[in-house]
Image 1 (cartoon, rainbow, N blue to C red):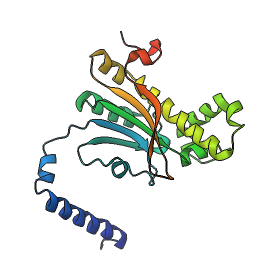
Image 2 (image 1 turned 60 degrees about the vertical axis):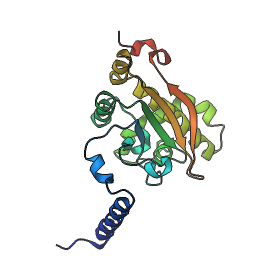
Image 3 (image 1 turned 60 degrees about the horizontal axis):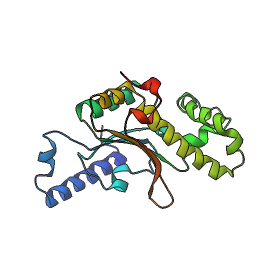
Image 4 (image 1 turned 45 degrees about the horizontal axis):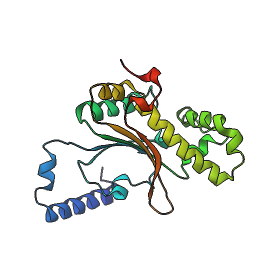
Length: 211
């Protein structure tokens, strides 16, 4: 069966990119066959409008990346936990970034009283976040309300990451590790700091500490 035209375009683009990289740096690919030592773990949204590597100007080997709908970190998600474990315990990343983005479709879906199917189970924490703050949120215009929830959700997920035994063990071993929450603005392509930088157990409730 011949390759579909749409897939042919991907392969052609890939070949062109690989040629350009070798033209600029003949040893580029050979260096990366020896392993990786990224500084960052990026936990972000799967939204196709959020180009992680382009907007951070990072290349292969710089960033370990985990994406899902609405940058949500569930403590029962074995995929996310496995990524976190490998990034912290094996790669020894020093910075974990949880990045949300304004006008997030997952957040907007969570704020609707509509049946979206399976995804509703995934975005339930956003509904819970809204319920906690609805008296304040309901005074805001719709777009502002959505963006406020996007910010709070990114912060909440950063604390979810920091409260895992994986991160707690790293801090217990005096491993240098900080968890950050930031947000991406689709309108101007800029990242915004959410003033959430969790540097150690003193920044989270004591119940999550490992003695």
